Image 1 (cartoon, helix red, strand yellow):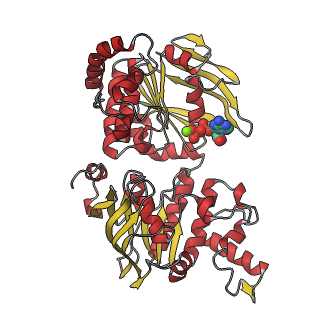
Image 2 (cartoon, helix red, strand yellow):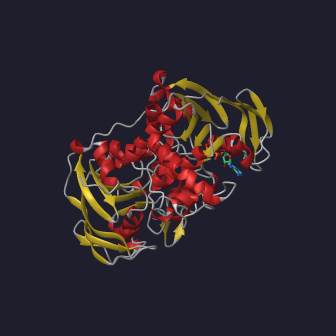
Image 3 (cartoon, helix red, strand yellow):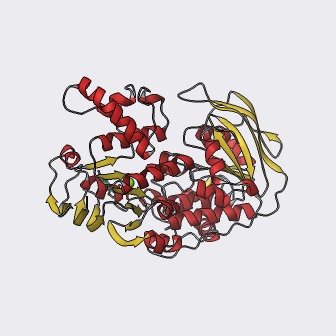
Length: 496
Ligand SMILES: Nc1ncnc2c1ncn2[C@@H]1O[C@H](COP(=O)(O)OP(=O)(O)O)[C@@H](O)[C@H]1O
Ligand SMILES: [Mg+2]
């Protein structure tokens, strides 16, 4: 079914999310909706799916103008959307979930649908055990159930919001094959993404959104990653070029570290790894396999059960956060305002948060504002970061906050850095700046442990890559051994 969204406008109390966006997708195609965080992608598709009413503009489906009274109305008309947060009921089985909301006597559907489910699943590569309970399934399997649910309801238009954010590379490949097969069967497939490489790999056409506007629609075969990046951020972005120095002595040593988790007894189990001076060691893994707990334990934010952590040979596992910082360990947390920065303070004040007790910034406990400003300018200048030094940081964008935090953490040339998803949610330009700052620290000899769910980021920056699965490190690969399918297999718990 042809989808045409015409001049859609949508304002929320604080922002105009869509300033008159037109978008068109056809049966038989996989169409990617590409854009940075906040570009308006989800809002536009929520309007198509009847979750929001547009303030202005119209929805056309197969040449007919439609107005949704409710999401159910849009579903009945053939629009199916897989949201970022799945809407399945975990205690129920796959089959029960598939039948939820279906009208008529359940036992009848049960019998009739079992065969249909099996054949649809086979046709589109959506294998999943109908008797399994949803809570037992991996994210990839849950996504398949969501898709099956929509297909069973005869969705002719399938929309998926950031479907690969919860998947391993392998599962992403399988999903893209499924989307291709669904398009071939005559359905219209739209998937939202902010990842350049995957839209180039998986889509026939790409519509780029920026700041609540549709900027361009291109055919994938005519598009290049650099051009898409420029369209996404509105200026040209030069990717950083890693040139790692020869690795030096061991700096950060983790020895059989075991860390309790919040939801299960052990989140990190007997993890052993070493990061050398001037080396970036990446940690890959699907979210929830112990990466966060590992980072927190290294930073001193989470107690450990057993094992050792050494910085330059000195034991740290019982040290306080402050002792670790003084020993030369820096932390770049995922949640910038929560852990890293004080929203009400200016950028300049945030930059000196850690060194305010020492001269020349303060003498006998009195701060010297001129010295603070000079320090702020120098730190921001070193990483060529355009951040307003005098504004309260809560007013800055996510990209600005992360650049600021990096400037602060890396300014003093720390011995080691633990960085947790440092570019999550940032635009391509800000992410490139963050990568440059990490590489500059590396060239000055900092040992970096980089935990990230973005495999492209790890493959770009890491000298070695540790893969975490179920709290353990299942393999440590050298750069020459970096191989997406193999890493994907390890992330899914397979053997190397
Ligand atoms: N329910 C909402 N209430 C208020 N603002 C919203 C709501 N949903 C989205 N926004 C705002 O609209 C803009 C576009 O958001 P969204 O469509 O989620 O972007 P994307 O999916 O491209 O990341 C953002 O500025 C966001 O903060
Ligand atoms: Mg979104």
